Image (tube, rainbow, N blue to C red):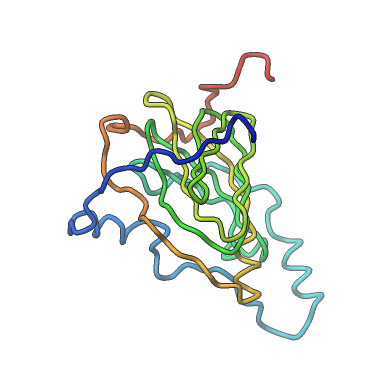
Length: 210
């Protein structure tokens, strides 16, 4: 067995699911939006050339400026590409920023996902098994895996670029997704006052590269 794989793992404590204040915060989070576009419509004339012309006219570079992080206070997201943007139909790419000591929601879904760890160190819990990661690694979430992400540091953030093909799976009517534990909205002592880094900063990369 890989020496970076161990059984079990810490589970965050109960964050008060019966609290009205927490429930109100959750309704404002990206993952709970009621009007999200998972697969965009292609409509108009039955004209493939028209759609090709439209796609060739959209920007090929998405700028971070003006595309701020959302959610928090533990896990923050910056969504670069989604079907609603009219650029792609088959994948979704976003940047995740984990505050010190942060944990994500615990959930599972049909689609796979790849997390390229840009900086920091942390671990995954996949179906009860712990997998540790650090900057430069890629964490793979397999189909139907119940998973959760954790920042192992209590004083440094961690950051991952996430690429997933969820839109394509939904388009094919492969719809299973289940949330086991909601994304935390409580402020822990470790993440209190933390603000996601809007600009790129090399907090954890070694000088001179790998």
